[in-house]
Length: 430
Ligand SMILES: NC(=O)c1ccc[n+]([C@@H]2O[C@H](COP(=O)([O-])OP(=O)(O)OC[C@H]3O[C@@H](n4cnc5c(N)ncnc54)[C@H](O)[C@@H]3O)[C@@H](O)[C@H]2O)c1
Ligand SMILES: CC(=O)N[C@@H]1[C@@H](OP(=O)(O)OP(=O)(O)OC[C@H]2O[C@@H](n3ccc(=O)[nH]c3=O)[C@H](O)[C@@H]2O)O[C@H](CO)[C@@H](O)[C@@H]1O
Image: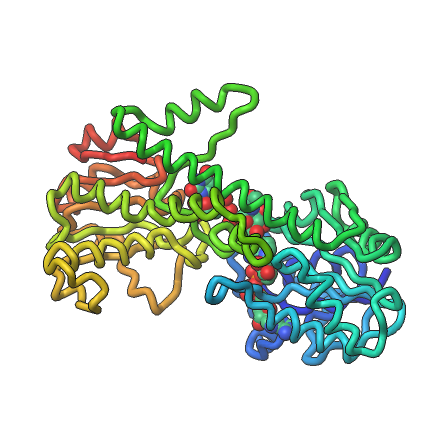
């Protein structure tokens, strides 16, 4: 077993550190966020992921220790953020982690980058930073191995997913295989090229984004033919080589709306990929059109948005389709009231629209979330923007009694339309 220093104890790094400890390694978890380290040391876990708190708690009782300084280790695993800023991947966190590793790097150690990055980052950005240690690549091992876990199923996927491993040389591949082989039950797919592994990771999320854009466009076309898009997609998917994804109010989360754009960092050939982004982002305007179609005008409407988490049964509201819809409704209402006033910063009250937000999972105090009765009470319409189980289980008779109007836009296709229509609700599905 080896010593492993994990850099970045967020959504990816903390479970990875815990699973490595579970596999018997001596794991040191390092993060620049001191409050996070304090909370971990105090055993105060704030994780929104099934089964994760138990795994982390038992790792902290075992061979996972929180460290306030980067320590020398056989392996350094870098799991720091790589946000998109001004259309570029912000790599300063990777560089900072690289510098901290360089200060402790010893001949024979292995550095593995797990963060999602534009192709070329491991070799062109991280490698040179690590060489500030005085060691050349080759004297230490260097690899890229992307994380592919699905939020909501992290622990299982950490173990079960196949893993791409791209090393700068055979020794780097071998070192990374030894580490991942200690806890991964999926296939380890190795390549002597970190850039290829970086590219493959981006392709996976790009495939999903483009496929969802197809589903979203199909939904708008099906509506023009008065057809149920989900039924049509399900029927089309019976073909052995067809797998169209599901339409929705947009694509959210910290990965899929962002990662495809990383492909554009070293290439100006993105075309379909950028169009897919625009189609997915444009679903907020399409849902707004649907509301206008039902309500006539939204300028003075009260609309309850049910769901600001980016997807069902999670608490993460990053790149939230529900919040994008709220902004789009407000912009459209302003433009409707005073043509040309779009983007002038007029308030809701001036525009007359009342957008209420509800989410049973999200706890962000900045979002002015309302209780479900407050959100629904007297509203002209409700939009299901997230496929939380709680929304699928809503009682149509209760909701119909709370709403003033009778329109529900089911942008996630989770309601039993017959039951809702029997309760007097007009359901518009995507
Ligand atoms: N969240 C996901 O579902 C997911 C899945 C696959 C890949 N990824 C990728 O993994 C990477 C990490 O994502 P995340 O969701 O865990 O992010 P996160 O924001 O949850 O956690 C990152 C952590 O890194 C810490 N950090 C920042 N700079 C640091 C430094 N120099 N040294 C040590 N710690 C530092 C932050 O304080 C934070 O706690 C990103 O590149 C992301 O795109 C995320
Ligand atoms: C290739 C892949 O699987 N990658 C996963 C993805 O995780 P995720 O949680 O971001 O992915 P999704 O569950 O797809 O959700 C994204 C958004 O798309 C909407 N959606 C989804 C399906 C659909 O048919 N129609 C939709 O509209 C959904 O509501 C939500 O807003 O990225 C992680 C980080 O890289 C990966 O680690 C993880 O493997």
